[in-house]
Length: 312
Image (cartoon, rainbow, N blue to C red):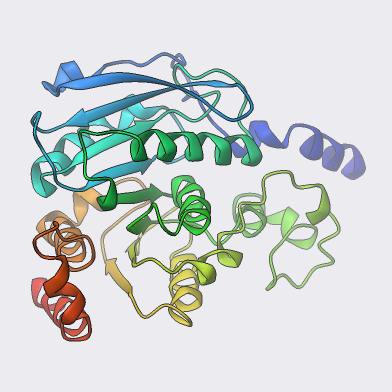
């Protein structure tokens, strides 16, 4: 029975890792940005392997030249379930937001996999860098949970196209999460800290090992961690920050005592939004401020940490 159970886990692992449809709901979008009075553009992309993808490009107003957030969502559900968050991020940060539906999610075709979603993310970034209505030097990747793993790969692969990256409640790897969600698996699957034989690591098709990538990212990174996260243990974010900061001095870690996996942006209140705003002001300034920031990067880095503490 144990062997049969393991075989089923291996065969149907994508069904366990990816959840495009929430229980009791359909795959289609329950609402569009119009419901929240947001003006948007339906964007259709083609990944490098031919899969057709859907996305929404949302602007606060037509001539907004602020940063463009390339948002990679959490696992369960589709981009429509994140529209309330996007509505607030537009208002608070005066930016543009590009929301991608991973393959198999929302209106996008195909079936999710790590290799496929990595291609999807690249297609989204390539689209943004070719637009003429945004400042392509101010593209910021924002990933929550699974989206943080996706965004980390993209940022590492495109150091000249991604200006900065924001990670919220992201895991070290799917290998480590397997033992968290299914404790009996921790003896057979796990990351470098696993004490078991890890005999099933080689058959995991979507390891999403963010811990092995984060230390290679050169862009500024903001870590937002909810300390009440019931899905991803908060130490995962702390380990990612420790690994990244070994070689990257432009890393900032901020935790939110009451933040859970899906509501850190809500429970964090003004401090959450102000933290992101300060990070963007420091590392993704507009063209008129870039020279000033580059000359005072060391002093500004100290200042932003102090100002974030003052928000407490």
